[in-house]
Image: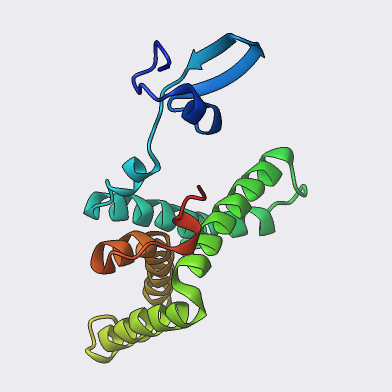
Length: 183
């Protein structure tokens, strides 16, 4: 007997173990209460990764890194260390927001790249900065510009870490272990 009002016409014995599109409750046999909800597939979020998705992750990584510290002295670090009256609630709130952002990015980067991948990403971007400095594109005595380059490398590593699972899945067709649904 199929359930009525649901886009999927699954027999009741299957719907009891895996509701097709909502919450299923048996109140008193033979009454079945069905509350339809919107069913969103997990694969829908995974299939839409593209270059714009990477750029969004990169922009948020740049905001996180440069809001925490930057050579222009307009950062959370300089705001807190320059406070004459001590910490106020706004500083604490902003600090908590930054810690949450760093936690999300660092955890995702470590899980996605792993320790060896993190070392390789750091070596890749670090050697790229070294190459730029060696070619003379950036003067070696300009500490602020070198600081911006290093912070840009940190942002790039975080953005690659946030995106690497998507890139690896596209290149190899393999899913990460935590992405596999238990059924």
